[in-house]
Image (cartoon, rainbow, N blue to C red; front, top):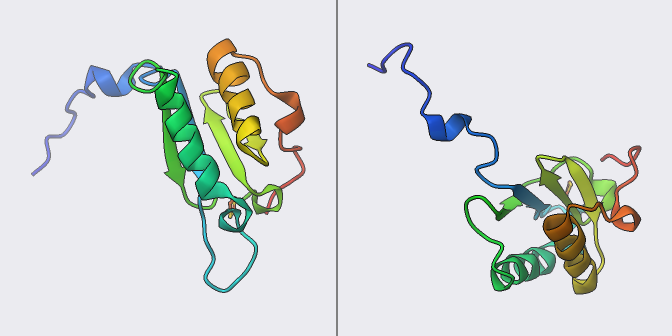
Length: 122
Ligand code: FES
């Protein structure tokens, strides 16, 4: 039986275990409907993961790059979101990913030109 009122471990309450958490939608729809997988999401994810590691930015206190399912903003595909800022980006190629890493993840500056407009949803 689980302990009731057990204290929450400090590690799960500390803000900023990762300074930035990057989620890439890699959703694929078998019925052929449009989705991030049809817009280079996996290649962008793989590239970002490698580039963040190569820059020495990955790990606790720094950056974590994760796969995600549909984030429900499919009309802007491919989609990624960075927390804790909750900044949503789209991208076309590796140079866009490089700019997000350099500007947002390293310097804390939003890349305005890659932002997903607020009205774009599913
Ligand atoms: S398929 Fe990527 S946001 Fe929905």
